[in-house]
Length: 170
Image 1 (cartoon, rainbow, N blue to C red):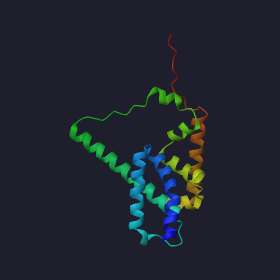
Image 2 (spheres, helix red, strand yellow; image 1 turned 135 degrees about the vertical axis):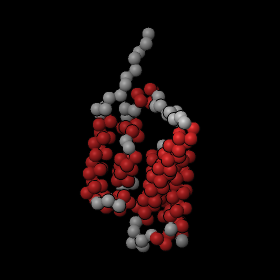
Image 3 (cartoon, helix red, strand yellow; image 1 turned 180 degrees about the vertical axis):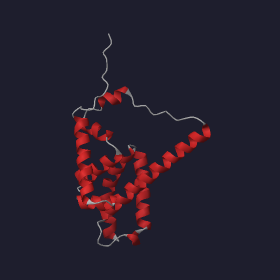
Image 4 (cartoon, rainbow, N blue to C red; image 1 turned 60 degrees about the vertical axis):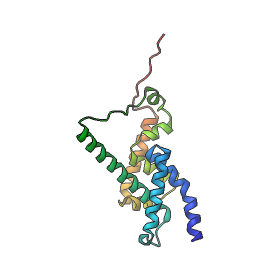
């Protein structure tokens, strides 16, 4: 059990970093990592012995995120039906839009799947095969999606997607 504890301690910061990028909120990321670990430990018997622990945990975390995201959208739609209004409280600030020129900000503008793919391959060092197992898709699909994610990141970083500029007032 000590070996498992050591492996989990080593993977925890990586899982948290990945969760922060998915949720964009440190508190929500902590909750996501905790619920993912709870699920992993409760389903330990289902884990394939030959499987990679890191890929298995990332798979659980990603699926937990997607499930929570779907639940949240369903809840919002139901709330809108019952209250008769919409919740348009989220509007990105002009300052945030202007600052979104660095590569890190461009990365944040990618969709969830693209961010996840780039994080798994580029940051966490997972192989295409491991990512394919996480997403349950062929390796070729992972390669093409990753190519599109890299292209989107380049376009955002190079400013090919135009952002509004600020006018200087006197």
